[in-house]
Length: 282
Image 1 (tube, rainbow, N blue to C red):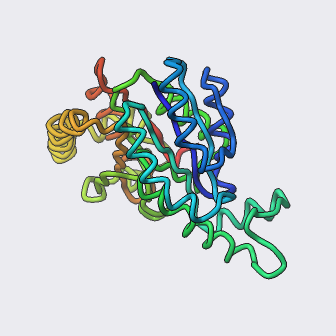
Image 2: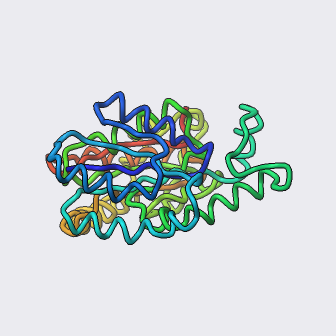
């Protein structure tokens, strides 16, 4: 019995995530009152329905009800319900921009509470859910199309399957806040300084050839791969459902892209679902 709880900040993409799950066969309920979560979970267990469910829970709930969620989750898990919490987030400037563009009112803002203050208040209210999240998705740099793809890749999977996201990024654009592990490849030779390679990416054959032919790059790749092969099964054995592995270089165009592509091919197996995202590539 699987129940996915979708929560997060207003403007971060919760409605898109729920709609995507609904398109993939989940029975979805938006804005379920937190006070009803326990009864709803108990009903699913009694009904024995094997269909996947997803519910949205947000800051429109009373603070006292949100504070009880960790206790409710522990009770439902003890009864055998397969619960997953997905929390969507984005940085405050991005959320301010999204509300400005859509001209929608934030659920916690009013004449006495400006938007930036409402966003911070929402972060505080949702801390009980954020702290228990199995998967956190930062959508600051994510388009709606990319978010739908990420939700399909990471949530529409076989039960008890470890979902691993390998993500390349550029340090000059910021470290992904939702990463579980971050590897820094800026120590490796940079194709950017090769005039013929500068406009290419780590997917292009000349860049692949340049990096694959360097012994330092090969040693770095081998050691990261060895770390992941040794520890991913440990996380899986501990019933961890999601891991995000981020590999960064300066601009997120060459070295990190190359390494993510190479590692993904070598990690793919029947029991670990590997997906790839290149944050800085169009």
